[in-house]
Length: 121
Image (cartoon, rainbow, N blue to C red; front, side):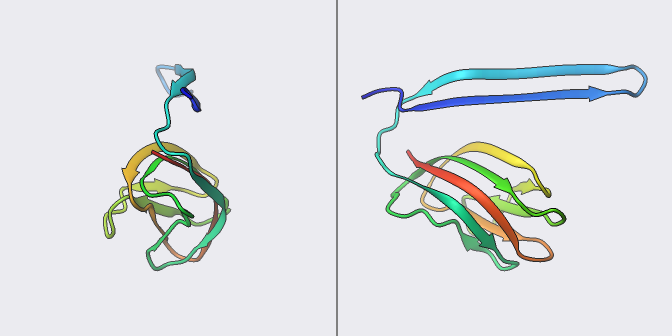
């Protein structure tokens, strides 16, 4: 089977400063083949010490979509222990490919809940 994954992403930016600026970018219906068959997801509490997202039986993670459910605190993410280069402020969402064995996460001030889906590469 082919095209098991469909990606859709959109962002709109509008700035009322002088000069007024508005931009939108949207990608819809991007089809991706999945070599593996597994996925894992749900919600997880992320503490202030680095931990991994639950991945079930996934060997190599491909795509990640994640939302920080906290109303105040941020969560940092990365695919290498100690290197958390992605920041999700309260309520923010990210969609990205990692091609890694793990996704690491850490809350900055207090534990945060996240909702996520990991799809095997």
